[in-house]
Image (tube, rainbow over the protein chains, first blue to last red):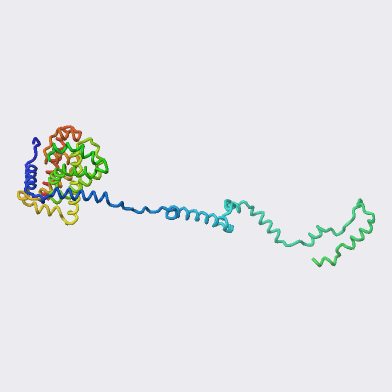
Length: 172
Length: 190
């Protein structure tokens, strides 16, 4: 052997060979081994094929189906909730109709508060007064000369009768 | 049956193994021709007859089960030899892991047993270390080392088998021998 083996490896190889040489194989070892192996492969060949039940993958056993169904139901529920919820517009919680897209603060700031103040002041002066009534209904009503009425005198008399008297002003 | 005679049966064995109807006859012939050679090889790699017997049975069953994977680009025995070597390596590593997990300090135990190297060299423990050291080698180094160390297979034959130059094989053997020796010495020093 041309390999330059170390003394340790040489001695070990020698020791290994001695160990094998000293060993006595069991009687008819190879015959028994052959018989054993042949029996193993014959058993494997003749053994009925083990039927491993294939898990039935029916649709209702698939987790994906249930996940998809749950997702669809959730989306439908959200849709119903979105369109059916009352439109409660507050500044802190946006309404769910399209007006919610308009910032409520912007809307309020667009209103001229001076106009509102003036209007309220005017309103605070009360209801219509006697002077207002006089403006609306003048006391001396005359029939225009050019009015095409046959009995002009009768009309003027009627109006004088119907006009409110001084005493009636207490009614206001 | 010697090596020269056994190889003339290869074609017949492979032909019989191809057909399901003749598989058993083919395997029976394979056992008659090769089981003893495989046993001798495994017995050198392993440390006891029982270990060699276990691994040989596994090896032969695997050969029967996977014989269709033999491409015919090497000799049948070479292919079976590799399967046996790999099985032996796996067996030794697993056995070492089992013993390491069952003992708290396996290395210290080995070192106690090897406290006297002169005595240990003749014992089973140092030979067990040798087997383990070879099993831990990378596959190609392990195959080359086994063939050269135990069987003294010529480098030219190994070169044809592995498709590697003789120089590369010599270097591979040299590295493997160094690793094996270092492993044994390191374990003795623990």
